Image (tube, rainbow, N blue to C red):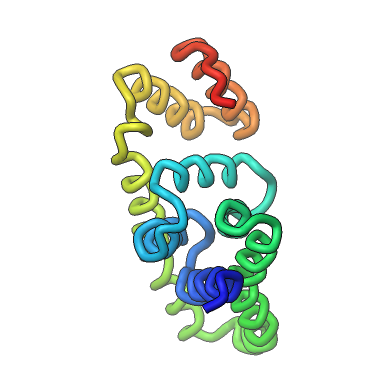
Length: 181
């Protein structure tokens, strides 16, 4: 099978069978990209997720774009991005009419309420598989830094961009400046 078609179909599958937004999609993206297709390794996947979270836009689309580029350059990016958004675009186009028509339906409300715990579980799963690698939790300093940033996020009204910048500065303070390019 042509690599571009395989990229498109893989990300179409990710887009079709992942619900709850980008963070909830991460375990499925990891399984398809790292485990099944072996297009990138887990360490590269985590780097791509970090970049995708810092760039504007949905994490699923950003990660698809970055993975597609890593696998097959600009065309890989285009095909991966189109793949991950195609099903959602079609589904939203069709569903909008019915959601407006049945917005007061008890069944629709029950379905949406039932999906919430599953989405929370998927987000927790994404956190656990990103945290389990020794590169993420490197030493006691990384645990302290993660805890401090978590407290800032949940206990203050600081803007997330400020917290990201602060985390970067603290990373330089804790670990020094280590250019990798």
